[in-house]
Amino acid sequence: MKKKKVIIFGSTGMAGHVLTRYLLSINKYDIINIAYRKKLNKETIIMDIQDIRAVRKIILKTKPDIIVNFIGILIKSSEERPDKAIYINSYFPHFLERMGKEYNIKIIHLSTDCVFSGKIGDYREMDKKDGEGWYARSKALGEILNEKDLTFRTSIVGPELKEEGEGLFHWFMNQKGVIWGHSQVYWTGVTTLELAKAIDAAIEQDLKGLYHLIPEKKISKYELLQLFKKIWNKNDVEIKEFRKIGEDKSLMNTRSDFKYKVKDYEPMLLELHEWMYKDKDFYTLYRLNTTVLVTGYKGFLGKNVIQALKKRDDVDIQVFGREDKRETLRKYLRECDFIIHLAGVNRPKRPNEFEQVNAGLTKTIVDYLLKIKRPVPIFFTSSIQADLKNPYGQSKKKAEKYLIGYSKENHAKIYIYRFPNVFGRWCKPNYNSVVATFCYNISHNLDIKIHDSDKDLDLIYIDDVVNIILKILDERFMDKNKYYYKVTTTYKITLQQLADTIYKVNRMRKKDKKPIFARKMTKYLYETLMSYVNDKNNNK
Image 1 (cartoon, helix red, strand yellow):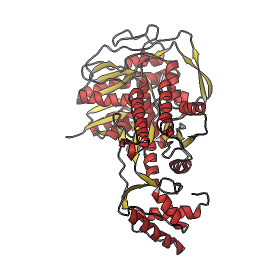
Image 2 (cartoon, rainbow, N blue to C red):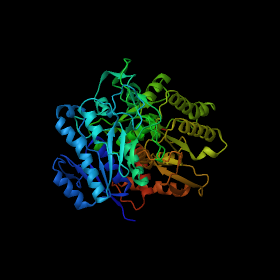
Image 3 (cartoon, helix red, strand yellow):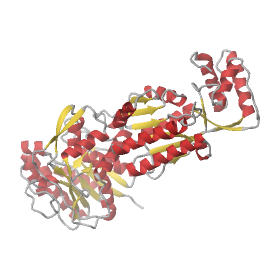
Image 4 (cartoon, helix red, strand yellow):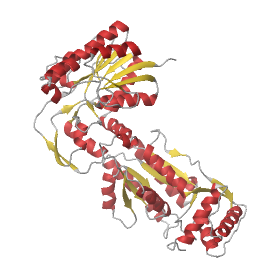
């Protein structure tokens, strides 16, 4: 089926750049994006819409099915240049409406809650537009009201591409210290990402007329700023409540013909947070480092994960170990963006440590996150023994249940991996890893014992585990109803084959020349063995 052709005017603006990038990402439309000064991508057409002949020419040349108008002059500029505000905010939308009527093109136009004064609140679609100032009046005049086109009336928050941006989110992200949030100023708006998704749905459903695109309830600007701080982990800002009675430009929606439910504020902002983090390099105006909490950081897995994280300049690392106090853990849980939960015991001194550490620490983490209502994503290293009836496996299984309950209640993403036997550098020999024990003993000319030479082993290399964790950290992929993820990169070998291979690579290393490997498994066993030769800190 032929894709609909969509022209987007204002593709580098706060709303326009997200819409353009979102529609390109879902690959449902042919997109033509038009901007004023700077290009969004190599396909961007640079155009001054005050050159109305050029606008008309591009519309006639491209023959779009839909035109989305996200161009507008904001409050400050409107007061400074009312002539420009009237042209861009008022005349231009109606010029597009006339072109749409003449050439059968659907127009989707973005209006604002500022067409109302805020003296009353809970404004319906056809209430009197009593906003004051050039911005409010020019936007009110620019609204397209007919039976073919669509005007979305709302308010938006989201990232910008220019340092001098005027939006609330952009302002907040550039603040430090004490700021004030109005608890008596109310808002019913959407994120720019939610707006983009609603535009897609509106095109699909051929929505027409004037529509208030809003969540189910209003929120104060103070509450909104608190959500910004919480979700973007901006701990260099203290928000104080300003209680003076202010304006209420909240909107009400009386229509039921659009089959799209706008998300509540926190889920909307969480989605925007993920959108921005997946494309950090695009949003260089904002410091988007991810604060990662690693539990069990002194263990075999923890050491390797920390080493990998330290090589990155987009991650701030927090660590929690057995020696740390619970208040330290609570502080980190209030601040972190992502948790890599590696802490666990498999050979405790006391049997109750299985319950205390493997299950108990997990419960402590999720209970506190539920209490403070922070839906922090959690990566958890479980075990292939979780379905076995032994104390270790049962404690891991209980931890999984705590995490699944947390995910359901807190709408948080969790990633449970039941890893087989992990091997690699820094794994403690003569403890619970046959690979570590064989590599250490053979490299130090010590005997090894093999009780069942035909026993099959299922192994995974430490770098493969670390790569899984980093991929999740970067992409945050997940079906909200999925909790378990399959381990795909494993190596199967018998106990005798393992011993034979390690003896082989030990002979290789004695030749004092790094060999060329035909198999990954051989290469990884060589690197593991060499870590015990070169690292004097490894001990029995």
